[in-house]
Length: 608
Image (cartoon, rainbow, N blue to C red; front, side):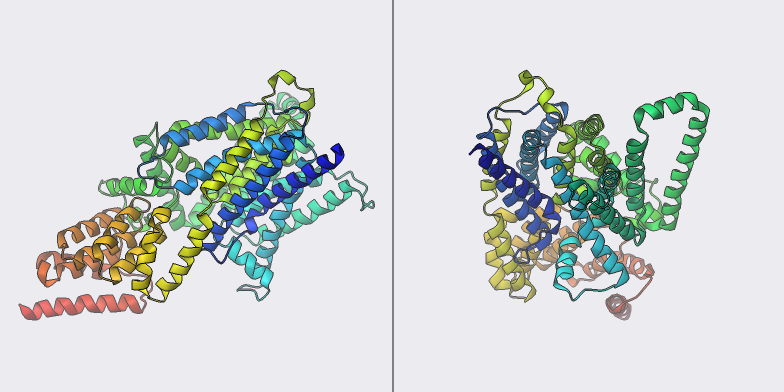
C-alpha cells in the first residue's frame, strides 16, 4: 500500500512539474493576446495540479524534510519588497503581482518535492533539455526554409514562440545540455537500454541541435550567453576550483596576462557588435543611462511593479530638455516598455534594496549549485543572468518557471538525509500549496475575461464600435491594467462620439505606457470636444519625450490650422519643421501628409 502511494505521489509530482516546464509551448487562440494569456492560464492550472500533488506528498510522508536555507529567506524578503513598494491605489499590474506570489509558492513546493523525491532532479533536467530542443528545431527550420510553414506543428510553434526572445531560451538550455553530456560521457555506448546511455545520446542530440540553431543566429547577446555558460560548465566539469587555485598559485604571472588578454577580446567583441549595430546600440545605451538616472530618483522604494514605462518617459523628457542630450539620441529615442536589462528594471521598480536581494538570491543559488555539484543547473542560472543583461526574459512567465526549477535544483541538497532534523520546518510546502490554491481561486475569472476580450476584438476589427463599446466597459474592472485593451475601448467610445469616456480610458493607459499613439488619441479626442489647448499640451508633452517624431509636428500643424484655434505663426513653424523631416522611405501615407500640409500652407498664402 505504501509503495502504491509512493509511486502515485511520484507520478503526480513528475507530471505536474513536466507540464509546468512545457509552458514555453502553451498558447490558446481562444483568448486575446493568445500567447501570453495562454501561458498564464497554463501556469495557473499546472500550479494547481502541482499544489494538489504536494498536498498528497505532505500528508503521506512520515515527517517533513524541508531544510530552510538562505535563498529561501532572500526570496521571501524579495517578495516582501514587491508587496511594500506596490502601489495598491493605482494597481498598475495586478496580474504580475499575483504571478509573483504564485512564484513564491511554487519555489517552496519545488524545494520540498526535490527534498522528498531526489529522483525528480534528473527527470526535470531531461524535460528542460527537451524544451530547448523544440525551439532549436524550429529555428533551424525557419533558417533553412524562410516563411510560414504549412505543417500544423510548426504553425503552432511559430505562434507560441514568436513573441518571446526564444533564441536566449535555447542559449540558457545549452549549458544544462552540455553538462549532461559530460556527466554521462563514460557510459556504455552500446547499452542503449540503460538510462545513462539514453541521457548521453539525448544530450548529444540536444547539444547538436542547439549549436546548429545558434550558428544561424547572429545576435551577440545570445552567443555571449551560450559561450560563457558553456565555458563555465566545461571548466567546472574538467578542472574545478581546486586545480584552478593550484594552477594560479604556480603560474600567477601567466594567469594575470591571460586574464587581461581575455578581457580585451571579450570587450572587443562587444564593441564590434555595437559598432556594427550602431543605431540599436545607441538606443540601448540611452535606455540604460536614463533608467539609471530614474533609479537614483527612486533609490529606496522604487516605483512599484509596472511603474517603469511612465517613469522612464518622465526622465527622458527632462533629459532631452538639457544641453547634454545629442541630436542622435533624440533621433533614436523610443518609449520602451522594458529596460532591456532586467537588473536595471528591477532596480527601478523595486528599488536598490530589491535589486540587491534579487542579485544575492541568484548568487547564493549559484553558490549552492556549485556546493551540491549541480553544474548544469548552475550553468543555466549563469546563462540566464548573462542574458538578462541584454534582454528582458523575466517579463515572460516561461523564463521565471525555468529559473525557479534551476535554482530549486541547485539549492536543494541531494544529501539532505544527513542534515540535522532540528533544522526541518514542518508543513511549509503544505502552506505553500494551500496558498497556491487560494491564488488560483483569485485568478478564476482570468480565462473567461480574456475569452470575452477576444470576442470584443473581433467586433472592434469589424468596426462594430457601438456594439463593442458597452461590452468593453463591462470588462474595465478586470482589464484596466492592459494598455491595448484600454486603447481599443477608447477608440470604440471615440468612434461613437463618447469622447469624455475615451479620454478617461486613455489617461489610465498613460499610467501604464508612454506610447505616442496614446498621446495622439487623447489629443484627437480633446480636439473633438473643442478643448484645443489641452490637445496642444498633450502633443507638446509627447514632443518633449520624442522630439524627433515628424508625425507629432504634423498633428500640431493641423491643430494650429483649425479655424477655431487658428495660430498662423505656430502653424508656419511646425509645418516647416514637419517638412524638414526626410524619412528614408516615403510611403503613400507620408506623401499624403506632406501634400496636406503644403495645401494648407498654400491656402493660407492665398488668403493673405
